[in-house]
Length: 634
Image 1 (cartoon, rainbow, N blue to C red):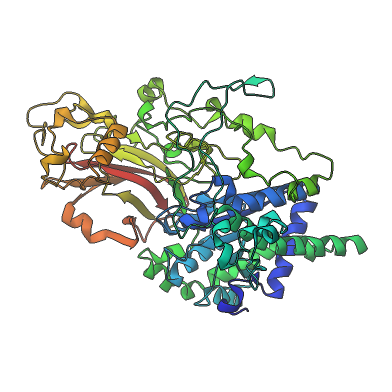
Image 2: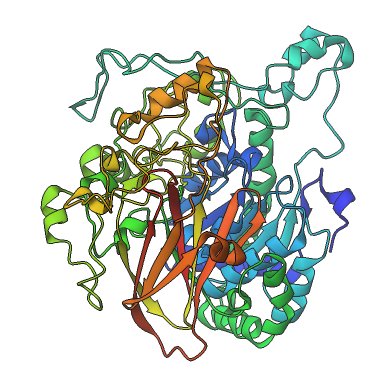
């Protein structure tokens, strides 16, 4: 095992046994013509904020390895699950579903937002339990020896990766000397005397003209973007690496993988590979069995992250509207809706269809070393064009219609009481059913920087006291545990309930029209125009946001609870009501802006079987909205 301080700026470390495990994974991918998949869970710096999405190091890792493995008949993907302002808890509570069950290598890079080792521990254990392949755990550091412990007890493959800044780069003193260096390292090579020549950390732009643009005979031209575009992407904070720093990180990750690939091909060249050099089924089973055998060793990590210890013993499932997520439609909350299938629950579309016009800032300048050109060696590498076609507006997930809403069945256990709600609304990540974190994903193409391309979004299903019941089918529950993640600090009620005075907006009586004249927000500052009567609420959230900026207020005050607030949920038709104080007793905040509630824990549950879960808010009308972002179950 390596020392953290010694390896952080180098290439990292990996035990010999784990390096052999990496070789075995690559051999299996090649011989079985399967996919080799890398996934990264992390924060905004790892996500690549300030850069284009494809410039983040996971995207550059895929751009390097995908054409190489393609020459060997193997598909490759690298998924970027970095999210701004968050750690990884919202992901690791259902790591298999959200990140994909096909992960070969799992990266963790969230040291700014997750200081404790428990987060890394639960992420690792859930990935080993829930993913089919018991992935290699390759983390940014292992200060508390979390990986060490897992490796010693289970044989799981582990490693720590460094930044690649081995001993620094040669420092030069003149512009002439600088220009003689390879383009990829010039940013790192300036002495203090010429430091101003190395200040250009970022390269990118928000828009490239699409007039007259076509692809494969398809007219994809656009006269002008639907909104005014900024000159360059935002998010360029001092702690966010630039594109060449991400490129260097990608190289530091790529090199050990290429070393392992070289070792595989060298062995194969001399003799056929033995079964224990590329067969994986028993290898994974052995690791998983030992994870279960030593479950008591991991329980403290779950307790530290304020979740049931069963998350450290059994594979969890989950659905979310956050992005990115693997197989985005299948892992969305909407995919398990068994009632309230209204068009308002469908995410907005991108402003245009892929692909993007060529952008020179994403590639090395002419005449400089171009790794992709070296790999191609005169034979152009053909990307998976079907993926681009599948990313078009007409191919994204399932879009609910009015006909779907009419057919919504509601509860099969308590249909007279649990009627499907009509006031649920999906958040605003455009094209979210193509947000899977991979290099060629295509989503979030709205707003004032259409080429930014980042996948991370905190969208949920927005509800208030008039939205009615949301009914969901949770497949194959085994242990009788249900946890939800919410945003109780949601600022605006769903547009769907505007003008309503009772649940679902129909057959309202005076006694049902509660709180229609109460202030929506808890702040009494009239100067910001936030105190509104119920029937004059501004529906357009973009207008709200622009109004906030004009008043130099980044966020409006969080809406207050009313005295009659209740959160109600039902499991197989049995309803439980929680007042605000009762809800607060079970609400946990294990990480920044992460709110989780364990609503169901049935120790006598007999599974696996499908379970119906329903939820609604009552009592406060439109005064107190929530976002439901995740449902997890075991």
